[in-house]
Amino acid sequence: MVRDLDINQIPGGEDEWITASMEDEEETCNTNGGAAAPRRKLRLTKEQSRLLEESFRQNHTLNPKQKEALALQLKLRPRQVEVWFQNRRARSKLKQTEMECEYLKRWFGSLTEQNRRLQREVEELRAMKVAPPTVMSPHSCEPLLASTLTMCPRCERVTTSTTAALDKGSTKMTVAAANTNTTTTAAALSSKVGTSALQSRPSSAAC
DNA sequence: CCATCGTGGAGGTTTACATCA
DNA sequence: TTTGATGTAAACCTCCACGAT
Image (cartoon, rainbow, N blue to C red):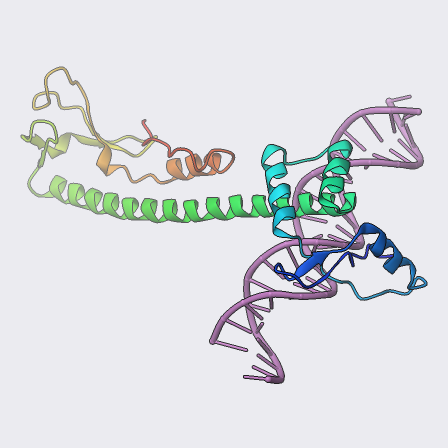
C-alpha cells in the first residue's frame, strides 16, 4: 500500500515550517518510484490551526463539500483536513472523559466521607438506644425517646413514629443522617455517568 | 428480503518531531 | 553539547454501522 506522504511542509520561517504547494508534494511522492520514503510530520501553521479550530467549533463533522472547500482554503489536501477532524474529535472526547473522571473521583471522595460520618452517627444512635433512651430532635431540640427509633427495611433509614415531641404538624420525623445505605447513591451515580454527570448532583435519596 | 459495495466515523496504533532534564 | 525520556499531533489501520444498489 502506498502511504499517504505529507511532505508538503518544510522547516523554516517563524513558525518553524512553511507550507509548500500541493503540486510540490505530488511531485515528491512520484519521484520515489514507489519506494517508501520516510514519513515527514506536517506542522500546521497558526493560521491553519486557527481556521480549523474555528470550523470545528461550528461543526464537528464535515460533509465532502465543506471538506473540499476548507482544504482549498487552507492549501491542504482534503484527506489532511479529514484526518485533522478525526483527531480533533478524538481529543475532545478524551478531554471530556478526563473531566468526567476527575469529577467522579471527587464525588466518590465526598460520598466516602459522608458515609463515614453517617456510620459514626448510626453507632452513636445505637449506643443511645441501649443506655440513655433519648435523642435530641433536630427540629425542637427537645429529647426524644430513642426506643421509638426504627429502621426502614427498604432504605435502612432510621425513623421514629413518635409524635409527641415533634414539631407541630409533623407526624413522622426522618433521621436522615442515620442513613447508611450507599447503594442508592451508587446507583444514582452510575445513572449519571452518561450525558449529564457534570451538570448536577442527585439530591439526597428519599425513601 | 438478502447480499454486496462504498463511505464515513470511532478507536487504537505508529511515527515524526519538540521539549526538557 | 549531547542524549534519552516523554509529550504531542499527524497519519494510518481496522472495524463497524449505514445507506444505496
